[in-house]
Image 1: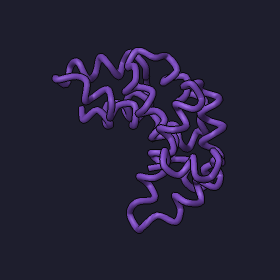
Image 2: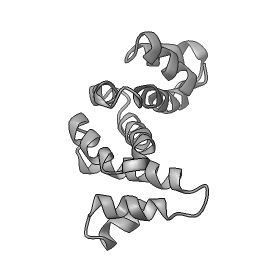
Image 3: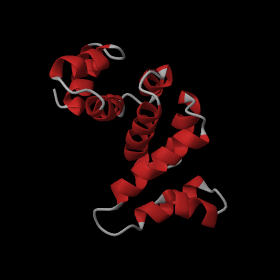
Length: 137
């Protein structure tokens, strides 16, 4: 979605976010998740870079973070940048970040035990609870 918008606004992230906000009802969240996927690639999956670009999404920051973490973990479930990213995002977005991590880790495992092990590799405490919820455990 945003991979089609970005070139038409000369790579301007704020203008891209404005276009996401203009999406049809029910599609803005998906647009911002796509924005997050593009953010992850553009930032080379660097946690601070992703955080900075997602901040430009304004009201879509939460869904950007969700899209970015899903891209990082889908690209490489062993990438320590996933955990590092969830640890640097604003505290209010941290649970949703670890939940997003779990949504990908959960699809890569077949049993509740292996899903739990995948989440335990990256999360503890409340972060683990959110990861496990995302993984469907």
